[in-house]
Length: 166
Ligand code: HEC
Image (cartoon, rainbow, N blue to C red; front, top):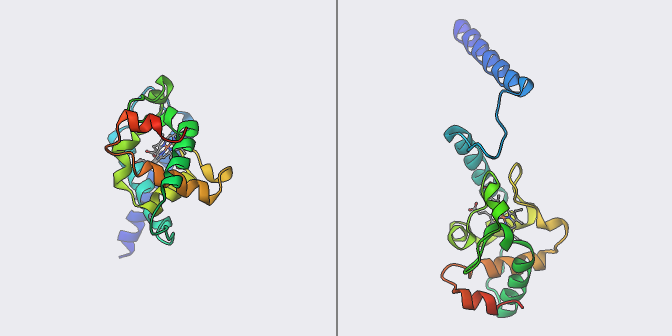
């Protein structure tokens, strides 16, 4: 047992040393022009997804949304989100495709998340990615309106998108 513990401790020290060496020597390539490694991507995505699921667990969403909220949310989306995430009939800006991770096309990505999780993501943002926290300058009511709108994105036509939110 003692031998096993000693071995495990030595292995941990080697790993910690290797990690520290990578951080201190500049050996890791942080360029956004180099894609994430498969392992790096898995670590980031898994950590992020589990963190969001856990932290959104206590948020109670409203039972439904009004057309007024959808329209108000569309207004915010056009003002703050479309540049990075695109929309029906509108591509994201060229510079958004230079981000790592690249912002997902929201009409396709939004279905993966519950209302509470979407609220959490928009309010708190996602560390070490370009997803900003909107809670610092938007109240909860605005954020629920944004959620109300983005949930309607799947299947929305470019004409419907243009007509919403002014
Ligand atoms: C500056 C660019 C940028 C802006 C502006 C931005 N986002 Fe994001 N967003 C991102 C990036 C990058 C990710 C991916 C993060 C990741 O994969 O870890 C993301 C992820 C998300 C996700 C999770 C999607 C998924 O499946 O990964 C949602 C939902 C989202 N953003 C909603 C919004 C909304 C709503 C707005 C506007 C209120 C907004 N974002 C504004 C860059 C942006």
